[in-house]
Length: 255
Length: 255
Image 1 (tube, rainbow over the protein chains, first blue to last red):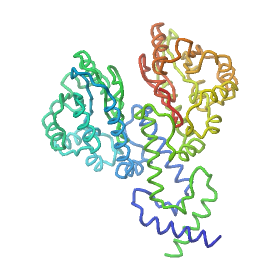
Image 2: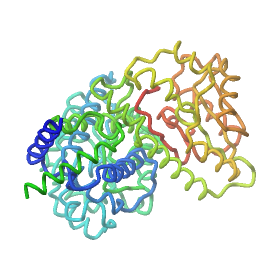
Image 3: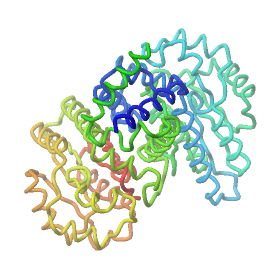
Image 4: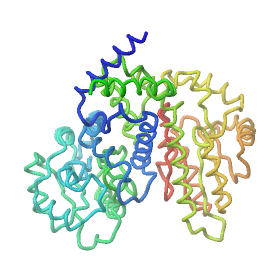
């Protein structure tokens, strides 16, 4: 029995060498596993309340979850989740019986939905720092945010199915040209509308601003059939979609 | 170094003996950790899409996540999350400036919100079996579902703060008396309304039925200030609350 345990443990010792660093952020074998698992559960609990809109608003990620969020974002967890959300959205999109009047709309948010700001957030500790709009604007103005791969796939699918695609972003009108350029370079083409915050929209919550724009779409006779966003403020409010798709984002919160 | 590793591993061997079975559902030390972690990520991904309403509808939990869901439900994960949701709800409730007209309402769902059906689901593989309404009705008719402790605390807090408490449940009118008895025995008293599905409501989705009842509350002049439920169909639709609180439930889905 003793020999078996020793051999089994040796297997772990060998096995762990092959693990990527994200799998066990801290050295499991020299900590008390129970405490470590409790700490990890604190962060999975935090993520649950964040992703289900139970915590509102919040400004930064908890200090104790800094490693957890980083490992989630750079490890396979984030990618698996965004892929799965897009897969579900794609299945739903295919199941919709579109009208022949060209009035069926799919709305996409931009940041953390079509484009990833992970290069920016990796330089800003994945949400541990309070949001700095001046710094973030500099990043936006570079126009180099990469596409979220699975969102690009979904985007192309819904266009092909015949949906009108409206992009509804919290970015400002003054960033229109750099946003267009960034989207095009990242592979997004042929959208029907790109709606940015106008001068009248500043000071409004995202929920209010986006609801107002959706109300206008409905008044113009469009049917909002799908809506993809990483923030609940992309999805909730008035003129809500029939089915919404919430992408994960544990790094920041927009009211 | 070799000796250090051996001693460290021995510490784990001793440490793991003290672990509750829920912490490592399968024997970690004799499996390939990387594959196991991938499998676990499949289930955390599934849970993310479920809890954020991206998967709709779904009938049973995935076979591959049976152990994961069980361990989550019986381990500390579920309890930590429901506690945290109630804490956030309590903080919000305290922050609300109530009118002096007695028209501020907090809505609670019943099953998996105030009362726990975990004793039933532990006999039915935590959602792996397709929902059986005949069997479930037998369980409901026993009237022995225990309170969710943190929900009882929140319930008492919001009553004390002066909210009107409306219970809005998908249970049928024919279960009114057993539901009242069960709630009372579990510690819930002094609600203002208990709304169950009437004969006209059968065949409606929960979203439609609950929205209609909320519309009536609003028409009667009530303000729906908070709403606690484990299903998105408790929370979405028309006459939505200002802030909703989504309790976890990876075991079943109600449209």
